[in-house]
Length: 228
Image (cartoon, rainbow, N blue to C red; front, side, top):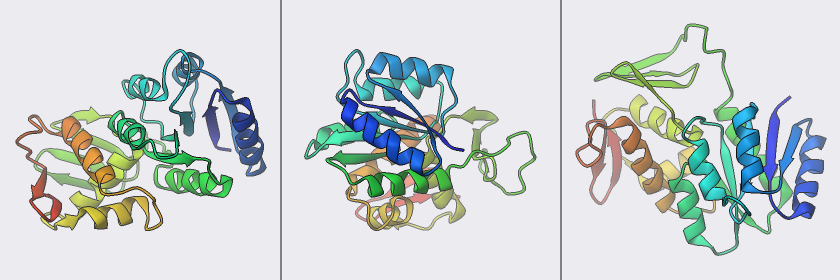
């Protein structure tokens, strides 16, 4: 049973999401402000967090930023319609996805299931059978762990998916739209800025100097590629 934390200060939204997700055999915990949400994420093991942007105590982006200091739990931000800056900031601070209010509960479920399928937890004590290694970087596909020069990095689900795709096809240039369709899906309502934000965050984690990348390079006017 997957365990989900739903965070929103509108109790009707929390109640509706909780009821609907429980119908899909998910265990649902709830929180109504950023402080409560942070404490619950810190002290519990969740498979997914649905996190509203506008919250008392701490905003959703603040919670996301703090959580990313110690956890790569998948986070989907809930944003108000048309607030593009909120969406971008959520991605900047480590969110994996965002859904715009008012939302269709079927879309919410589909997004959750898609991320859970790709970021399903593995037993990391088992030796992975599928490993990629290039230029000091090692990616364990089964356990979804990433090491650079022996140091383990903490990537979000989407950051890992992006790195895995680029690294699996070294020197192949992917356009931003190709990456958006492949990683987020052809029905994803976001635009190419989503890719740029995730590439920037990924470089900050894997590169010694993100301004002079060793691994993920930009093909100006085209897209991105992993250099072998």
